[in-house]
Image (cartoon, rainbow, N blue to C red; front, top):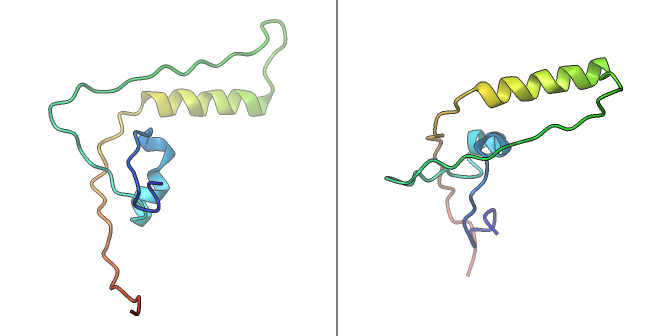
Length: 85
């Protein structure tokens, strides 16, 4: 619905970075609002060591969680209306 200009959504910025950079979505800053936070848990078996790939993925998650992502200021470029009547 957001993509079709029929709605708005609250999404993690990391989930839509590509769309923001390409101008497919626009981030809207909400002034004087409390910052939203969420927890992400990683669960794995205690007695089985993580594979190298799993360890790398876990390090990637930790690094992403430690980065304070600035509010995206990307604005969408307007396209000329090419529809005919």
